[in-house]
Image (tube, rainbow, N blue to C red):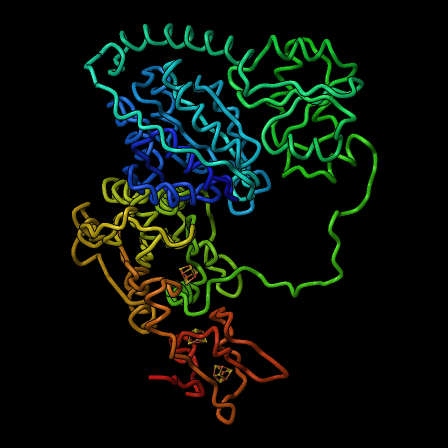
Length: 586
Ligand code: SF4
Ligand code: SF4
Ligand code: SF4
């Protein structure tokens, strides 16, 4: 059967067809839909883990236990999971282990543009790169086989364009491979130094075997056309190169990119006059080709920044500038990113914004938007969990410099479970007098509403225990009197909470509890609610604009509330000193 599928859907399907039985992930764009789709196959026991390190450790255990296992994460997630990632290469597998690294050239929704291909030689794991949806499906199946045959984990490296673009795929039946027998083997699976030294040698031998395979496998192939130009490429860059050069060039299309196929590259180089290396971001292939003593052109004409597209390639290699391919004469109004209308985080950011001397360490999530005008609250954003730990560092620096500044660290509920919890423990343990704000919106909102340990549901839809954040906070050593829980829709209570936190002299936790306004049930519940402005009473003081709600606009001097966007959270009503906003629909 044929079907149109995105790369992420095809990866999930490939895992299903390959007989995969365990999958784990932490959501992160552009990888999120992989596990959401895997969860539709009940033959695979899949979970959202609290973070990528846990997901990979679950994956390592499952693979050692004999299950074909898939673990998915976005590129920065692999940094979190790097610890087990490096060691599982030494241990090898029993059931095949495939780790998806979904990279983001162009940083559409990420904090950096790291090229995770560089992880493969560093961690010494096999790397496979598909270039369309069909290859996503086929190569995942191949990856499980390679992982088992060469006793190495496989890093399956995709990028946003591969994950989200759709293409035709041919579906097959699932191959029931079952779960392999587990046999205790501490020399292989318990990495104490004596065992690890021996396993390092085995790993190098496995990589040698894999290098030989890389030179002859179908994942790496030559497509010979005109031989004046030879293009070495992989992933989505292959598609762009084909679009620009067509049959004017020959291609060495690489699908297995670590270990690199040295002999094949030499053979290809001998067949063509001039070599172009076309790849996004870092010169990963190019450096390898140059290190072999083969002359080629790559980053001399292509930037290491951003995504490639055919237009960039034409300009770089053919000196042709045809302008953007799909020019439209419609110009959309510019709209800065902001928290949604009725977002529960608005109340706490508004309350914090009143303290101009406050230094706020933010985190990754919707609440990163707290840094944007008119709220302007957040000072730093580094990575998941750093909201708490960077706050500790900021406070320490201020203490050392005798600067009396209050520091708040902000994380969400999912981020708290991800890696915020260790920052909390650090603050308690090291007696750092900061306030840790946990924005509990009962969902992982930033990636599209995935469940997390605080939501009471698993990825597979089962009802489960809700991990009580307040109880965890107290169990970590925050004193009873230093924990305040507020509803951020209640501005007065939120203000009181922030004031108490501001005046605290010990580690303090402020939890703001209110579900994300976009959760289906919440939307339904509040669909009939909204606020409106009584124009006769409005003094045009513009105070309500300071909360940054996109439902409130200023038009021809009047303040208006868009009924379709508003959910009646009443935050604007609470900041209006003239009672000119009323709630309707109750
Ligand atoms: S009640 Fe006010 S703040 Fe809340 S969503 Fe409506 S317009 Fe925005
Ligand atoms: S998705 Fe939810 S939490 Fe995120 S900004 Fe919108 S309402 Fe707020
Ligand atoms: S805060 Fe009240 S009075 Fe001021 S502009 Fe808004 S609606 Fe009008």
